[in-house]
Length: 363
View 1 (spheres, rainbow, N blue to C red):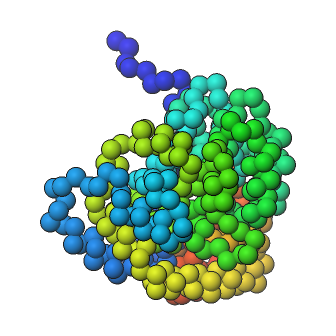
View 2: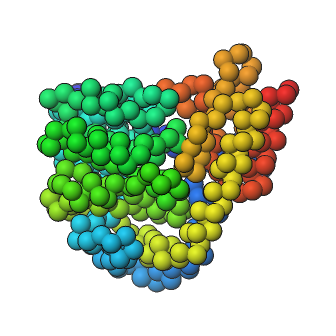
């Protein structure tokens, strides 16, 4: 008998593997593999989620109205042009399904987020990458890679896993250089961590036309990765498509309640930002002092590059860190086999990482 066959291309997808959370035989693990919020979620978000326990038999607000209104008020955006999703991953996938398919190409930079390729292949489109320069998206290379088949360009800004970004002027140049029928998706998952005066998340490009959308998440700064909550701001035509394709109750009640509470807890968000502002440069400096290369980052993580010598490379470093209970992220799947990505943790966790890397380098 012949079993049901998936659509061509589905079996070419390499499933996404998230950062590990535990090491067998190790009593205490320090997880710095998934760029999760170092301080955890706002206490107000946790209380809001607990308060929903007696209401989980009710369907959630399918339009996420309260959260969209709060986001719109904070950023001066039209709530009608905001849509919420089960993490920004869901929205990225919907955009691929809605705007690309067999015979189409989805373009992004060489070391861009792995989900772009997965989303493209899942709908039958072909993922295409453009070379980066100094591990940074390059507008000229992206524009050179555009073909008549290109339907979507994904730009992670800041980029995961490199931590690099391109300024607002370069993003605008990218948009101007793309044909108007190509959808530009700006993935600004780490926007809240950026403190550069030449950076914007891209809302101004959304307002300037009908072919750009910005995706955001509650998984990083707001530390709600376990609840899966994200949002996007786009022109009316694209938001209308998203609302037609997404599931009617795609965000659960607990996620909506916790997300709203976290978003409105400005003091806690500012605390998390100050924490990252201090420890990101500290960790970068300390690791650099060990003789390792740290890619300049504006996110809540660093990319550390290791020499090629046997016993001192990234694979050996990862194994050594794990032996000490420290979980970071190997980057082979991103074409960066010489690198490890390390999330900014608590002060104690950051110190342990440095001490452990020092032991590895000196050993």
